[in-house]
Amino acid sequence: MFTSMPFPVGFAVPPGWRAPGPSETGCPLGTVACVRSEPAAVIAAAGGFRPDGASLPEIAAESVRDLRESGAVVEVLRRAEVGAAGSPGLAQVLRVRAPGAAEVVQCQAFLALHDVDDHGKRAVLRFVMATTGAGELAEDFRRFLGSIRPGTSQEDEESQ
Image 1 (spheres, rainbow, N blue to C red):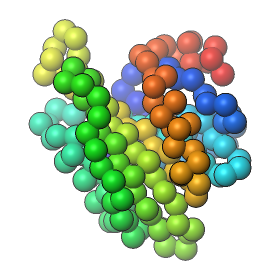
Image 2 (image 1 turned 45 degrees about the vertical axis):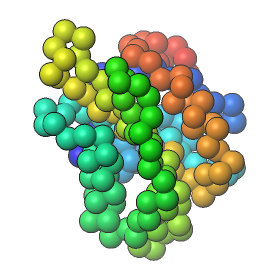
Image 3 (image 1 turned 180 degrees about the vertical axis):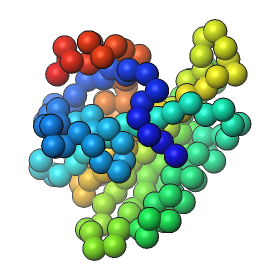
Image 4 (image 1 turned 30 degrees about the vertical axis):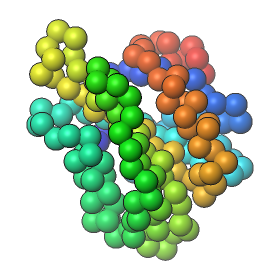
């Protein structure tokens, strides 16, 4: 289960996207990082400390399970481990149809970060792009993910 980010994270808003307005900052996927009108899309972030030893594939499977438990029909289109040993990640692409809603594609990326002072302490961050036009926005999502860095609240406010 993901809630809010366990620490501030900075990022660059891709061209064609914008920072969310006050009424657009929260959604079931997490805290909205940026939105796009055409095609309609949102990138949201969530995370938390994971004291358990769950692997990133297990955590990604939890995300699919949670969607299904909410009543959505979910198809896993692709799943791949990404990153390096020191900064592991996992990406998955899902087709999701929630009851009474249009079908969307979710591109999810999970990043595991270990505390530099206590390697046993691990945070897992999840970034989700939900859209009806995933193919044309995949590069935007990759660009967004490549810009993620530890930050401060002040840095995030200055970048918007």
